[in-house]
Amino acid sequence: MGGSQSRSVGGDQGSGFAAGTPGSAPPPCSGMREDPASSASDCPVPEEYRGRHGIFNVYNTKIDPRNNMPTVASQGLAPGQKRAIPTARQASTIPKSGTDGTWTYPSPQMFYNSLVRKGKAEDCTEDDMTSVVSVHNSMNEDTWRRVATWEKLHVDECRNPMLLRFLGRPDDLSPLAMARKLLTGETPFDRHDWYIDRNGKQVRYVIDYYFHEDKAGTPGQFDLVVRPAADDMTSILDRVKMSIYVGCAMVGIPCPITGNNGEIGAEASSVNTTAPES
Picture 1: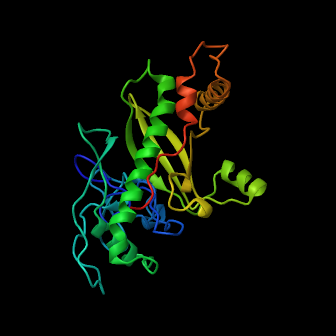
Picture 2: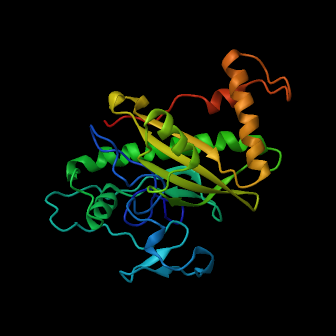
Picture 3: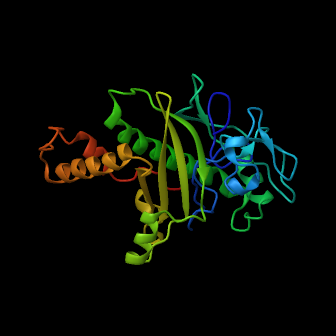
């Protein structure tokens, strides 16, 4: 997401969500990044020192500090490309902080250009891009739905949380992912940190993305583990509170402490809705 009204995930200009390739685990270009293959290492300047007007990476390309992606989208054909790829972009439902609109997803052409530029297009063809971007967008919509559910714990403080920025961290295992790897052997194919604007307060969420090969082609092929980062006591308490809500929802009783009717817990534990490739 990276347009003025919306932002894209995974494209060469402005997206950053997770995406999968037909019949296989998704490429390492998922989550909410304009360029699914880029990372914070694209810019040697610490984030807190980056200027309002963007910074430049080693390719002398202007970068948006909110997503570490190029500010100008590349919609031209990639080197060696044999067939045209759609260039239309889709608006997300994810509200973009500082605007009255939403983030915008990358076009299939932008997504493909990014993969080619980073040398990660070996397993993708031009014909794959439309379905890959469709899954990518669907996954990010599901991610936002889950973040919004957590934010309901603070509805009295903020009724309209928005996505401020995000960061892809595919090579950094979260503590929870490390524990899951030790216990089950599963490793996420991607990780994103999403920064939420909660009435001016920045709140970080950690999202681990898993792919289940045995469920490929079904909504259950992806497993999204979304939770607020344990950066402060409020977020730690939120994680404790949500675990109680989820447990109560599973047995069909209201929370004995807060009286919550279980709606939030049921939403938080609902099945993944990411659509399979069409």
